[in-house]
Image (cartoon, rainbow, N blue to C red; front, side, top):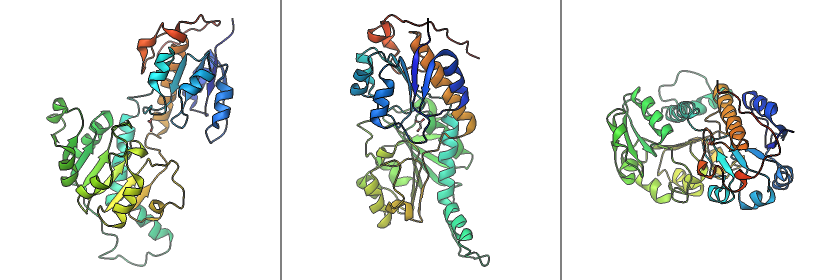
Length: 343
Ligand code: GLV
């Protein structure tokens, strides 16, 4: 008996690739850019499993074009690129990589907050441009972070970690979420408020919601008007949660003071986009979870999800484990596979 065939849409850290290569016949897309759609459809046509990234759209068309596919393992916590109902309908298991990136992403969101508040990128640009001539009493004055008010939009795992970091800076933390988390309010010293109140009172607004139809353009022109003119927006969730064009207008009109974005709509943001040129806007290329250790852990979970799915077992981090034993997941296997022991 051979090994299952899998397609991996990019080179991922060895912690995942080594496991995948040991248990599967893997084809790994080698380019820095994602495989074009037609390549993805062609290469996955005969695959039993797929390791995808947030740049790969996994929808009904792809699932139908790849009739052997029984598991899709996304190396990301966000999974808005996968149509889960379409996968479930066909008995295709899907998984993501939550948990391991929570603190790393919160670290980065806080770093963006600090960088924007204290104008660090502008300072670096200033020195690089040879403009630094003396200590200036009025030079690059920013906003204090300590004792300021942080507004969290979304209080999932990453939002909660952001709140912990804010506490170290003696910040007041307000939050809004569709699910009130009274269990966390006293331990993390949080105050719940409706979204408009969070926005009206926060010096920093940090977005931590998943992208869903309900959160699409949640941060729009009307929301920016509700924010303080001195406020700074931080987004490490998904680009389309913020209406990019409305953000440009809000920054141009001074409705808010600044923004720091790890994620944008579109992604990548073209180099000639107005946001890139604005000194009060920091844009970085979707790297909030990009520490070497965390990306290794994400790759390993993605590999373990893949292997469990190929074996017809519940995924360690499954999004639709209720389809185990159903549809394609119940098809006979013409390969032999052994689940590696978890370390
Ligand atoms: C990155 O954005 C992720 O969802 O893991």
